[in-house]
Amino acid sequence: MKVLVQKVLSASVEVNQKTVSQINRGLLLFISIEKDDTAAQADYLAKKVAALRIFEDENKKMNLSVQDVNGELLAVSQFTLAADLSRGNRPGFDSAAAPKEAEKLYEYFVEQLKKQNLPVQTGIFQADMSVKLINDGPCTFLLQR
Image (cartoon, rainbow, N blue to C red; front, side, top):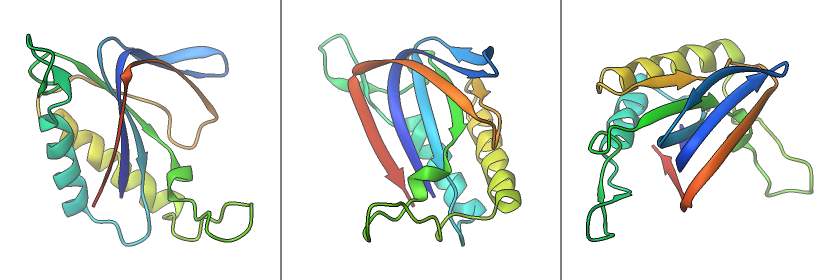
C-alpha cells in the first residue's frame, strides 16, 4: 500500500466537470492498493498520516501535524502508483489489487482516517477525475507499508 502525501493550501476533485469534493489547507492523499495489502497496513498508514509533522511551527520548522493545524484531508484512489516501470516504456500494473478488493481497502483506509478525528473528503473510486491542487512548499512524501 502506498500513500503519496502532498501538503496543500487547497485541493479539489472534479468528475464530469462537477466538483465532488474540496478542501482548504491540509493534505491531499493519493492512495494505491496493491495485491496482498492488508487492513493492518491501512491502520498503520492512517495513523502515520494523522501524526506526520510536516506543517511549520512559529519557528518555520516542520513540527506540526495536520491535526495540530486543524487541516483537512482529501483522499483519492490512484492505482497508477502501483505501476512497474522497470521494463520498457509502458507501465505494468500486475501488482495492483483487483478493483473490488482495492475499493474495499481504500474505503477502510478512509474510515481509519476519520477515526483520527480528521475531516476527510474523497474522490470517486474508479472515476475519471480531475484533481486540482495548490501544493504548499512544494511538499510531497511517499509513505508505504
